[in-house]
Length: 140
Figure 1 (cartoon, one colour):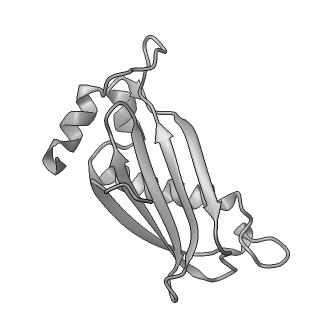
Figure 2 (tube, helix red, strand yellow):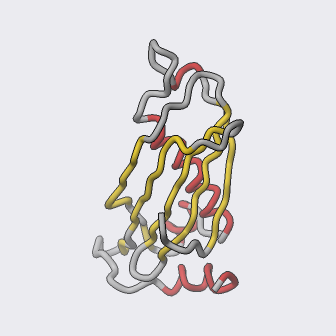
């Protein structure tokens, strides 16, 4: 991930029993849940969570998500998920790295792209909504 982060957060969690398969390895689909936890923490950092998005008149659906699985997390491992805002002009791109807490080994790399959709019209915005720029202005 070569993009320079405007903002970053990290969050930690222990891999729970209900997230693993019969081999005690995290089922691949659960990494989406893990990056969502980190994304929510990042949105809180600049005071623009999902409810605030709705209040601003926009929804921000994910239109692209990519994950690269490097290694597996296992039952009871502690993982660290880093989420970094790397683009905010015309879209939001967040890069993620999931690491094993103990070793620091990279387990998964990912990114998501979200676009602004005007709730009233259902139209995608091709310009960055002012409400997002206002939220990010202290960090620019």
